[in-house]
Image 1: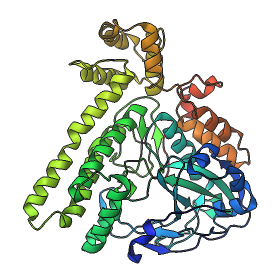
Image 2 (image 1 turned 180 degrees about the vertical axis):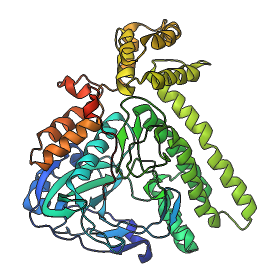
Image 3 (image 1 turned 180 degrees about the horizontal axis):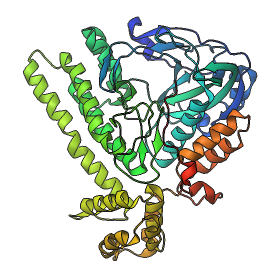
Image 4 (image 1 turned 90 degrees about the vertical axis):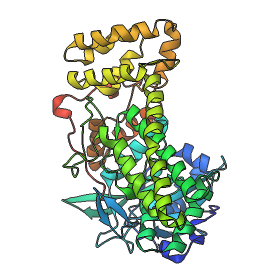
Length: 477
């Protein structure tokens, strides 16, 4: 099929990536195709469904003009330094400039081994592919910056993990796949030439108004502050915030053991490998700062000969995250509470509600959605002790009494979703798909496309019963 690629990453030196073909699969079958995203990218959805298009989405054929590269990067994983990681099971097909004028990467995930696979098979099994498709598209619908899912394809081939699973390939779309770990990779090698080329490329691609490495750092700090605040407002837990999983573009990337809160608690962890709670819901802002400090360290060699001055300047920029995040968090939660104009004490009111929700084991999404309705007292049913809610609600109602009910309801329901990708519903979709039934997957995706509307299937709004709770999520390797 014909795709007009406009590849800029391959203009960088060869040491930025490895050219490698995808590994063919035996029996590709299309599971899902994102027609709306295809249209935004300027791609023909019917052509993507054709045998030629399916061959591309499965990794059986590279179209003319494709890049066909695996990118090199390093990273801190759970705080431990790994000098070489890279795309071990992903392949950048190329870059396209969409109908909206924006440049985006198109990448295959699960397309076979690369020089960075570290003895792995480079494949993905069906579950993580469906999880990333569901969650990334839900995040986009929720208004959270994110990579997107263009297609999911089953391969007809087995993938061996703790047991044998059916294989699949995800076609992922991103503003870029440049990570904090990409900068760390070249900084660790003291490759100043590559570090400068990468910095210039990232500025040109993402922050053309930024001036030099310090400007790039400042832009990344602002983007991450906004992103993490939106994660917190959605009740989202990334689960594996390693530096190789942080995009300098400020998008959510690498959906592995991610999950959404059911009952609210800031120490909630789902990731099966996060045994110390490093990436718990409430720790995500401080981990973002830690990651940004690693980006700053990587950029120091480009900030002038006076290293002490460079450290001082970079430290000041990174420390600015706290104020930027606080302002973004205040905006997010003020909107969730229907507060139209900022007043002193608004943040304290939001934190007090969250504290009571944690003690009362209140469901995060259902509590805020109930507050958004004509009768906010419906939220008290989410608390083990409803009087704890009542004590908070009296002050909140006094705060919003000047806002007409219809105005408040419309505004709050536009930011407090009725529907999120509940962990147990994702698991339900995956288990059905393993038996060849993709109906739950398609039902869930269709509903999540309009998360702020009351769903046609109200059962998708329900919190899990105790026997349905998903207490651990897993990496997609």
